[in-house]
Each structure stands twice: as C-alpha cells, then as structure tokens.
Image 1 (cartoon, rainbow, N blue to C red):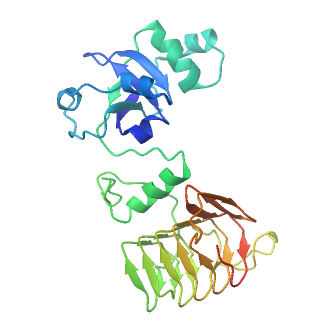
Image 2: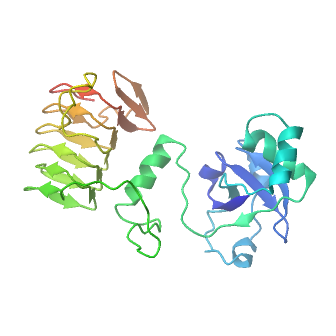
Image 3: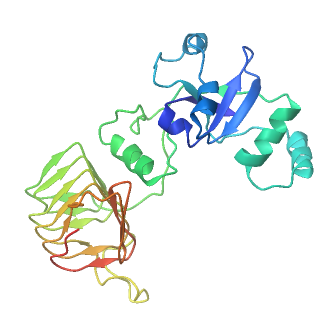
Amino acid sequence: IASLPVVESDAKRLGLLKIDDGSKIVDFAEKPKEDSLLQSFTLPKSFHKKWDLPNNSDKKYLGSMGIYIFKRDVLAALLEEDNREDFGKHLIPTQIKKGKSYAFIYNGYWEDIGTISSFYEANLALTKNKLGLNTYDESNPIFSRLCHLPGPRVKDCKITDSIICDGSIIFASEITNSIIGLRSHIQKGTSIKRSILAPNHYYYRPENLKYLPENFGIGQNCQIENAIIDEHVKIGNNVKLINQKNLDTFDGEGIYIRDGIIIVSANTHIPDNYIL
C-alpha cells in the first residue's frame, strides 16, 4: 500500500496504517473519527528520521494513498474470499489480517482531492507552486490533450500569481491567485480572486448543442471570489459571486456553496446583477 505521512484533518478521511520496523502493516483503520482510535495510530517520534522524511511534526499519521500493488494470484484469491465491493473498507482489512501486507513510504508530491475544499486548494496551490508540484519540469513531463489554440490575449489587466491558459481573451481589471482555463472570455471591469475557471470546449455554442448558453464567459464589472466556475458558463454583467453572507453550504439553480466555496455548475446562465 503506497502511503505517506499526513496531518490530522487528512487522517480522518483516509485509511490509516500502523507498521513495524520492517514496514509490515500490523493495523489498519478506514477514515477513523474517534479520537481514541486516531491517537492509537500516531507515528513514533523516530518515524520521519528512520524513513528520511522531512521532520514535519504536524504530519503524525501514516495515510493510505489508495494505491495498491498485488501479486495477481493473491488479488484473485482475495476477491474469491471477500466479495464485498470496497477496497479500503473491506478488502484491505481482510488482506492485512492474512499477513504479508506492507507499506511503501512515499516522499513526494501527492494530494487527495476527494472534497471540494481539497480540490480547490490543490489547484490554487499551483499558482504559487508552494506544494512542490513542478509542472514545468521537462524531465518529468505532464502529458495532456494537445490544443491548437492561440496564446491568451490580455488587455489592461493586472494579473498576480495566476495561470492563464491558451485561447483566453482577457479584458478584466484584475485577476489574482486564480486559474483561467482554455477559451475563457472575461469582459472589462471584472475582478477575479482565488478562483478556478474550467476550460471551455468551444468559444460559441455549436448549432447541435441547444442546451448550452449561446456564448460563454464572464460579463462586465463582475466580482468573483473563492469560486469554481465549470465549463460553458455564461455570467452576465454586474454579477457578484462573493458569498456575502459567509455561508458554508447553499443550493441554488446551478449555483452552490460547499465548504464556503462558490460552485457554478456546467452550462449555467447567471443573469445580470445577480448577487450571492
């Protein structure tokens, strides 16, 4: 089981491992919530030094990365023995009880993005490269779909700690700590802070896709903060998406709030002067 040290907030949503000096797994708990159980999985003080890991005192639990390597016959036998469907909750505990299960200690970049907040934070961290994922390393390239698009066009916009993707047309007044996806179109006077704009597949709605808004982009004099904007969204003029009531959750028509983060779902049309 690939694993790495994690902080307590992550430990409660991952599988936790307890290993001996030979990295053999001696105990496992899936998403433990009880403090007493969590405490029993605290790493010994010598752990980081033994495995030549950065001595981060906050990362005091060994979390499963959800990556498992089996010998084929062992996996086949396990599936025959335990026909339940979940690896973390069912199959891994069964295998650990049988013995011969070991942890591989990983020392590199990894983020679990199983929640809105973790997805949001992991993406925005790329704008400052503060978590160690170097997307500009030619010796370890990241392959994605090739897009034949022009470079972004930017006019009279102050951009700070942001990623602007190809094909974008930017007339905004300010973009800060944000990711602006492919083919994004942002009109003048608009301010975007700490937000993620998903890439669009088109500049304008194809004739055969009538369910999409006629065109996509963000209108004039909008204010967008702490938001995730999905693909093919049309936002009118003078719209404010700022979570002014500081809500933790909200359900609207194509607009939601989770973990305090505003989410605009794909293909949504937000009219002029809308405020959230």
